[in-house]
Amino acid sequence: MIKMCINVNVKPPFIKLEQFLKFSGACETGGEAKNAIQGGYVHVNGEICTMRGKKIADGDIVELDEQQYKCCMR
Image (cartoon, one colour):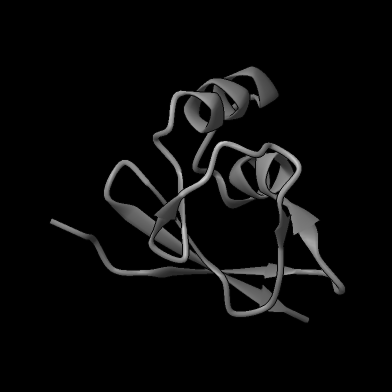
């Protein structure tokens, strides 16, 4: 069951997926973020993403452990 989507405010123009997971609090460390991404546990806009450097832009939805995080550019 998906929990309520959490808005995460970041500076434009984009943030890399691995950094987004740490900044949002979805992962505590870079190593944890790397393992989650490479393990296929992270979805970006509904699709599995295994690219740590994927650019996350305004409006993108990142999901990990049934929690969604929406990227909101300031």
